[in-house]
Length: 195
Image (cartoon, helix red, strand yellow):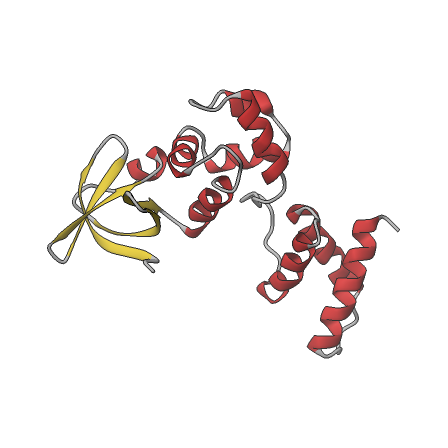
């Protein structure tokens, strides 16, 4: 499927950007703040996601992978479709959205155009801790699988990151990578369980 499209931004509409790529002009629906960051008549790369139903095909675009992942998480929330997700993302910055979700700030979420109280509550329940803030330090990429495993077990992503970082401080040097991962995982679970 389409991962991204590279081309020249030929025009911007109310909800979409038009990208000229090898004599084909693509209409790509984007969050407003992503769209406005793209320079007109300049080349850019837009990450994409294709929405396909029997009566419609629509291409959605994002300036980076984090924004696309946010969109993909939003559309998992009951009552939020692709069009609503783009509108939500266009009405709040990425950092503000992450903070509002992590702090369960319903007032901030309800201030986003088109987002009501019930949907804001559903978003907090479904996404709290799933979008890692840009302010958080990233753990070494070697341990992303451990974090994903902890998140899969129901732990909050931010807490899983923190647990891996804490557990890493306890590990002695000189261990083989497989042994190190086992110990990290075990120590992270102990830390998360509060034992």
